Length: 325
Image 1 (cartoon, one colour):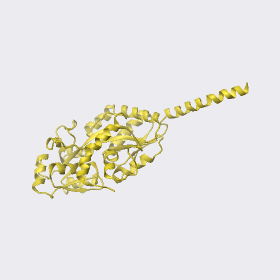
Image 2 (image 1 turned 90 degrees about the vertical axis):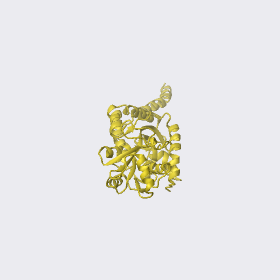
Image 3 (image 1 turned 30 degrees about the vertical axis):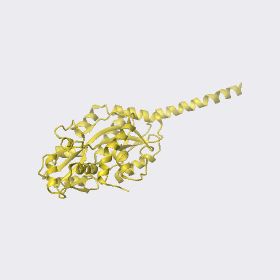
């Protein structure tokens, strides 16, 4: 009888263990989650990360803490995300830089965006905004092009670094508008804005979350957005494509997890992101304050989107001639 009971208990043990593991996974998150932002504090990526983490914390009942790991065009933080333990307690912001541009700009990356990171969801689509200093005697894109053609090489555009979407937006503009303007890279958007406002550099393509407040505050003039159509949150600013047909240079933000993260965790995180993006407060901040559009959330279609995004940006990368090895 004792032997029979031991045998029955041994058969039941795997089921108990499986149930325990399911419960452990279902309990995620059971502690604070680290969220890597691969850029410095104070910029648009940092703002988006903090707003999103606040909402995810509310949805999932645990604190999500933003950890800024800037440098090397986002490669430092993205590499740390790719190499983190796949347990759901290290997540991170993925962007057009980490998954579209850097794979084209670097012959060898310390991570593989397609194999080392799971794209859980896009969370925002953003255009860049062309801003010019108030002292520049132009009121629209056509006048800017005419001025730059009249005095080739005299005017400069700032960016937060070579190979960024800001830099490549300018390079694509140079090529399509047939103008000779000088690229001046800065170590971050802060110093670049200082020189733009003062007129040391005359123009800058910058992400909507950081440029739109500068325009609304009257510090710079907003001439055009880099999306195919006008942005609903600032309909008074034309699309550059209205003057340069075919000009498009849009960016995106998303949430990624290390490859190998258990499916129950990914599914719960995905559902929490979908719910977070439905919140009216977040939608208002996205649209009105930051100039962001909402993409379709979730994992479905992410790989197809990424393939199309790489096709979109390839001409700008080629026009720039930049290699960052």
